Image 1 (tube, rainbow, N blue to C red):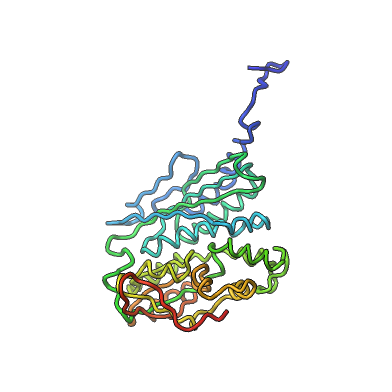
Image 2: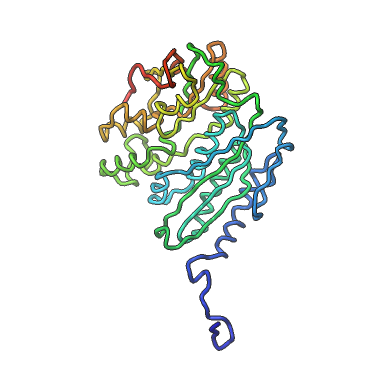
Length: 359
């Protein structure tokens, strides 16, 4: 091994190859308090072990089914990188995972994240992961671990990617959807979204390019905000509200409205022979969607299959419980309204529309 005159090694180090182990350790130390703040029954949020532990018995489950989910943020991440705004991206990551499992009746128990980059910027990474921890705490799940990877040569300077993984549990008799209980006449309840959430951003970025606006220009649809800031509005976390709605006993099914919109996602919680009839006149279309549609001439059908258009979750409830389900969502801070009903169909379930979006 080559040495200098003092006898110290002059050979290559991992840091010379672009990977800074000390930076990774500094990040773990920095995010430790945020992770500990997510403690819940069954989990110890200390970081640093090879795996994260969770005690289902301590969490109070008797006959649980485990439900898992994984997702990323998609090309919304590119807007965050281009604007240097990372405060809401962690919530996007958590929401896309926990919202997916709560619709099956599951309470999210724990979360793990994967952060990959070319060269680790501790400050930026800490902002992202602290946002993940805040969203975990709001959703009642523990951040019990994660992985940070430096991969020089694989990512361009300043780029990074995120993935999230969550596991939840639901008592066996409470798994959703309850397909056998659904019938024609059941009510569809739409729960408002906070914005574009984390789907359709490849099209959003094309629309921004077509508009000629820069990301720091005033947002035409959100007074007082820049375009970048408005488009980075974090995905709504529905866990607490959805669990409260389920406690009413009136929820037969839930659909998280992600890529594919209401068109493709609502049928995922419906049985064969029943269709979801949605009255588009009942949907309060958010200004961001009106701007996107008008700016690029996007057809209504394309909007409905690409974006949530203002509805981030749909619940199925029987008529007699619909009011209490709506009240539960509202009391938890989410705006909820009737948007349609189940109707007799033929073959695989599908979404059918009447009325028109206010684009």
